[in-house]
Image (cartoon, rainbow, N blue to C red):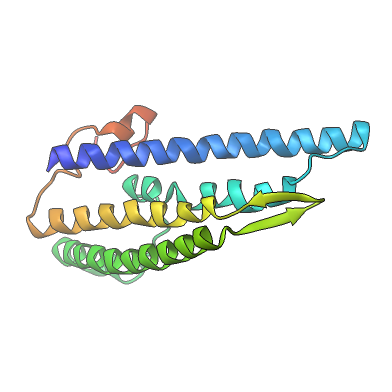
Amino acid sequence: MKPVLNIIDRVILALGFLAACAVVLMMLHVTLDVVLDILFNRPLPGTLIIVSNYYMPLVTFLPLAFVERLENHVSADVLTQFLPQRGQTHIFGWTFLLCFTVCALLTYATWLEAVDKFHIGAFKMERGMKVLTWPIRFAAPIGYGILTLLFLFKFVAYTIRSNVLREGKNILGILGANSGVNE
């Protein structure tokens, strides 16, 4: 199971890195747009479309699995905290199956949407500039897809009682994150 987890972790890390790059590029793009607008009264064309249709989807969808792998998604253990450890383990284990199912459906739906936008060549216009928007539609199925695989892996690990998710450091550990590892 470790080789599969290593592959998943590498993909997750790459997508997280791309999302981080998108944040930096968005910051530089918007700053340059504002500076050019204030100093020369010539803002960059297409900034609003590029920020809202490129950077934001990358920042939103690509790091979904990264956050889940680090076990940093928001959780509210209001009722489960009172259950014995064994009960909590089983609830969390079966929750992975539910999350896998939901994410698989989201992957499928967003994939169909992305393919549809690809076939029609979707674009938006801003200040006479045509900006293709169909390519970024694939960010959602990519983000949901790797999240789906991660939940499937977690469910399989739960069903075979594997501790692979808790053992040792993984590739995400290079960031200094705990990544669910008990130290």
